[in-house]
Image 1 (cartoon, rainbow, N blue to C red):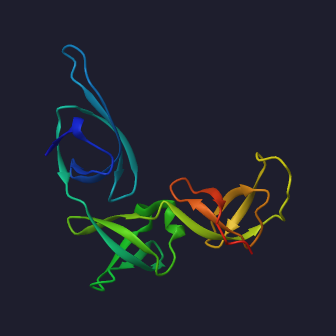
Image 2: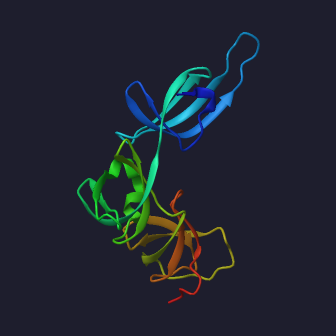
Image 3: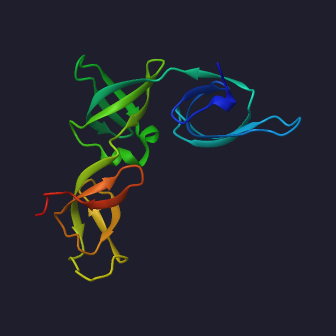
Length: 190
């Protein structure tokens, strides 16, 4: 058990029978007779939904151990992404709703960390930065302005905004958390 005032991002808790991952936890101490409060943003690990809730600081919550295992992405079918443990060859399926928009970035044989709580897969951790190829964009323009961006479709179908100098076939570095262009990959000019 852990007090709500001790919640930290990355922790997993059980509250009212549901499993949650703590995304944000801000503790605000109370004054006088007013007790403190912890404002949280939680991700429901069963549905993938986000819930914002405030807990009394002294409320005891059941914290759950999170086990991370390196796994290899194999394939997706409909609403499930399938992963394999390269050491034991054990396979697990994780719902796309739990992974979120980042499921589109998964590529066969990609190594990722899969988090388990009570033996069930509940989260997939992708690298912070991925190198991806631009499948389609408008022809490059070499204007001197840095503030003009254009849409580009990546090989995985994801659409993002890129600078004017990027062309079809370029490999770019993508910020996975924000799904935004970072820069052109080094040595990857086509």
